[in-house]
Structure formats: structure tokens, C-alpha cells
Length: 164
Image (cartoon, rainbow, N blue to C red; front, side, top):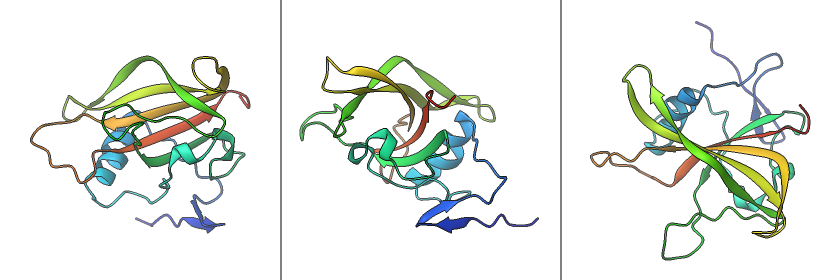
């Protein structure tokens, strides 16, 4: 089997022309996020590590022409003591919407992760104005007998409806 050669451009790893990275929710959780958290080798080093709070959605690294982008990010808490996640950026904030969706492994028939949907709002809560930027945030389900290297790592899938 031939190996796929990734292309590096402006410090960003990309797929060669004609190839698309379109993983399913199950693949993101079980093939990428789980490997990242447990420091196992990734199937491909195509998802960059960033701090999402350092960027407004339109300034995130990657090809601006791509409607969808993927990132690994560490969860940043709002306060030193507590579990509230900081989702604020310089221009706005990510607001959770709807219920979290369980991600089930078809092979093991068990829940391995959760997907949270967030929408970007310009301004400060609670008076921000909704935008077309949508993010799906993936996290592993905590299992008491598993020893995580970093339980605060999450995978994010960002898209916008503006170009659709």
C-alpha cells in the first residue's frame, strides 16, 4: 500500500490537491482524539494544535477557502478553581446550543465520546449577536479505570454557513 504524502505550506500540513479530510464523528473520537489524549501515534498529522481562545473564527490558521477545519485544543478554564470552560475570544464567544450528542463505537457498541455544538456570537454575553460560525467540540467520555495523559485535550471541527 502506498503512503499518502502530506504537503507542508506556510508551516501548515495539508493534504495533496484532490484529497479531502472528512472524518466521521466516530473517526474523530476513536482514531484521532483518543490517540492524541493517550499519546498514541495518529493516523495522519493533519490536525494542528492551537489555543482556540487566541483566535476569532475568521482568523484561525489554515486555508481560508476551506469551509471546514479541524483543530486539537486544550480546554481553558474560566477560573483557577472550578470547571467552567472559557470560550471567549477577542471579539466574541462560543455559546453551546442543544444537547450533547453521544459518539458510539460501532465496533465496541459503547459510548466513547461526546459532541457539543457551539455557535459564535460577536460581543459580550448575554448580548452578543449570533454569527454563521459553528463549531463541534469533541471530548472523550471519562472512564474511571483509564489513565489519561491529558484529559483536557479536545478536538474541534469548525465550519461556517456563510459560504454554503
